[in-house]
Amino acid sequence: MTGSTVPRRMLGRRLRHLRETAGVSTALACRAIEVSPQTLWRLEGGQSVKLKAIYVEALCRLYEASPDDTAALLGLVQEAQRSGWWHSYGDLVPAHFDLYLGLEESARRITTWHLTLLPGLLQTPEYRRAMIWTVFPGMSTPEVEQRVEVTVKRQQRLDDPEFCVSALLSESVLHHQVGGPAVMARSIWHLAELGDRRNVSIRIVPHRVGSHLGLQTDHFVLLEFPSDTASGTRTKWIEPPVVYVEGFTGALYLEKDTEVDRYRSALVEINRLALDEGDTRKMLAQRAKEWAP
Image (cartoon, rainbow, N blue to C red):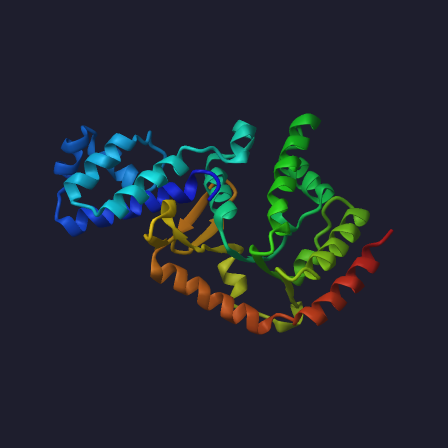
C-alpha cells in the first residue's frame, strides 16, 4: 500500500472492532493511552492523528488482541506514517482531494460516471491545463504546470495491469469544448487509445437514451480495494468500497453499505444504457474528426 490513507482507515476500523468486541468503553480506552475522546474518535475513524506504536500496543493489550492482530496493527502504523508522492505538492492538493488520492493509489478497481467533463485519469495535459485556467484564471503558469504534473503522475497507475478503470461517460463530455477544437480532438483520440488497454473500459451513454438515473446522481466514483494480508501475518482484512462524490468546494466519502449499494444499483442502470466498447470507439472516432481543426 502507498501513502497513509488506506492503512489509517484499516487501522482505525480494526481498533474499533477490537474495542467493541472486548466490551471496552471509549472512556477506558482513552485513559489507557491518555488521549481525549475526540482523539480516539479520530483514530478509530482513520482520520489524521499522530500515530504512535506505543498507543496501539497499549490498546491491543487492553483489548486482549491476538499476537497476529497486534503485529498486523503495528505494521499498519508503519505504513500509515509513510507519505504519498502527492504530499510533496503541499497546498496544491486540496485537503479533501488528499484523501481521495490516497484511496485512488490503493484501489484495485475504479468505476466512474461523468456527465460533462473527462475524469482526471483520462485527461490529456492540455485538457487539464484548460480546466485549471477556467477555475483559476489568475493562476501563474508555474503553479498551473505543477497541478498538471499531479494529474500526469496519477495517470501512471494506468500502466499497472492489476489496476482496472471502468469509465462511463455521458455523450455531453464529447460536446463541451474545453481548451478549443484541437484540444478536444486530441482528448477524444486519447480516450480511444486508452480504451484499447486491457485494464481500461470506456463506454458512452448516448443522448438518445433520454432521461435516466445517471442524470440524477451527478458524477461519482466507486473505489474498490484488494484484500490485504497485513504485515506478512496470516491476518487478512478487506478495505470496504468507498463512493466519492465531488462538489465545487468539497467532497463526500460514502462508506455505509446502504449508500454504496444505491450507487452500485445506479451503475447497473447506467451500464445497461451505455454503448458497448465497439460502438463507443466508433462514436469517439466520429466526434474527434468533427472537432479536428
